[in-house]
Image 1 (spheres, rainbow, N blue to C red):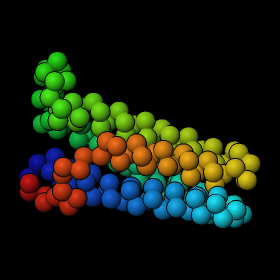
Image 2 (cartoon, rainbow, N blue to C red):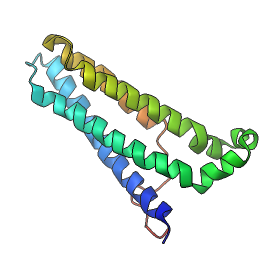
Image 3 (tube, rainbow, N blue to C red):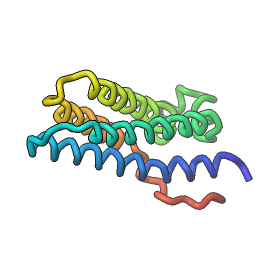
Image 4 (spheres, rainbow, N blue to C red):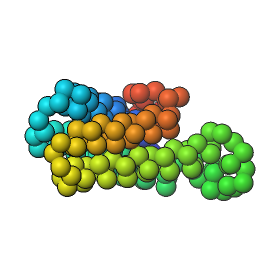
Length: 151
């Protein structure tokens, strides 16, 4: 059994956890911001968990990028890959957008410790909201959420 199908299955499963964590973090942040609640450091954990799951997703995605038949085909001829929407998506668009989303998430998680408490819910809601939108924009919805390992 190749490592590729197992890593792809894990990557596809972990995206569900990333989405749930981002949704929870944005929800907590919106409830705090709009409900004018007092900030507690427990709220930051939602952002940290979401970003941590995204870090894991990047690690697995980076390995997949190196061993994927799609990216190997794209690297064989980038000029041709840029003409093929599916190859371009996996070779360039998906990874670049997810990396930008991860950077935004990290900046938010770090800034939550350094800005005044009264601004933290707003930063978390807007910053992780942007992160969530970026993730959704370049998430491949054509794959099964729970693929078979042998596929």
